[in-house]
Length: 319
Image (cartoon, rainbow, N blue to C red; front, side, top):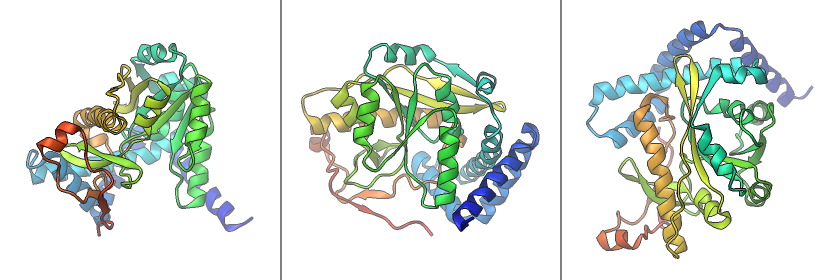
């Protein structure tokens, strides 16, 4: 047995053990681990606090931001035990663990016959999305960025696909996505991560320009597939899948302006959900890492919809 196989076995055993912990105890221990992590992991604590200050300014104040950051770490601690329990779930456990709200929006989008683009974010416990996908009418394919640590990536690939979800790595994903949509199936994309400037466009997120994946807007414009927002929110020990209505596609005849306007709308939806459940978003990610080189465009440029998205710099990771 090679080293990768041994490490994969250890990871699998770790989550299996966590899955044996009763939910109430897992929540309590997860909260404790989160509090420990908040104090021990200075790098990610600094990122979370910086992001919270950037997003909310002085309201809430420093003390409230620290409290909120601790709650973020506690939620991440709970996530570990939830992934362990998910390892033990069967398909029939889905309706007991996840309540769907707004499924009719998803069905209406499917009825258009062009497949569905599911827009989601790192809210609640996004690793349980494959269970939600298995509860919907058609097969769902998840676009994901492979992890750099092969044994852990292998574990999550197995976890995400165990109920039949397809997996599409981000590299060279366009052809496979078009094939999936052509079959009338669904593609889920996480839209709240930082992107390099050649892959995204700069649009507003919490009042600051954030380089955002333009792929979803590009696919919607090219295929006409409806975009439906779906977020999995932790609620009293279980989860609520909030499925919103289809987001109408903005078409002006200007491709660049359309990509920016539609991506801006997607960011607005994500921001509204984060504002309602701020403790459940992944604040430890450097969402504003890629910075525009040019200053924020003036009124004339904003009116034209141009955001100088090709000119930017990437900051080094926070220390």
